[in-house]
Amino acid sequence: MDTPSADGAAAAAAYFTKLYAYAYATGDLTTWNGMSEPTCTFCSSVTAGVNAMLSAGESDSSAEIVVTNVSALEITPSAFYSAELQMSQGPSQRYDSAGQVISRGEGQSWDLVFALAWRDGWFVREIDSEPTQTATP
Image (cartoon, one colour):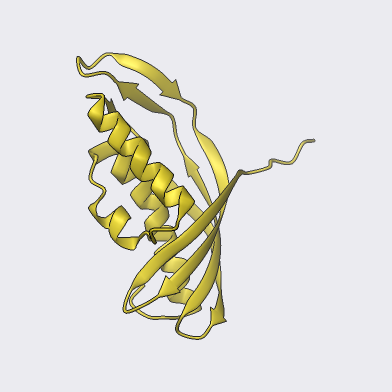
């Protein structure tokens, strides 16, 4: 993740994906916001969601995210990259300020496509997400 390369972009995308669960579980957006471009709509929506949860006195038991099938391409050498990955996350629960369960989320798998930039570190420009399609028999 320390180099501007396709491998570095793949590692950065996987790391950022795992930050999603961390941000909701801890309320700590420091690294998430540090890697997010101001124009990243997906990134901003996560920041807003975590802040709304905290403002309401709620907490979340986000399950760990498992990342698979990571690949990346160099678009402009040492500057712009794209990455694709699949991720899955188990069930989660949202709690009110008294610790009572107020909602439950089912586990799900997603396909993610990242637009990344390198400027002495990785920045997420945007993420597109779609539920993973499973084959039907």
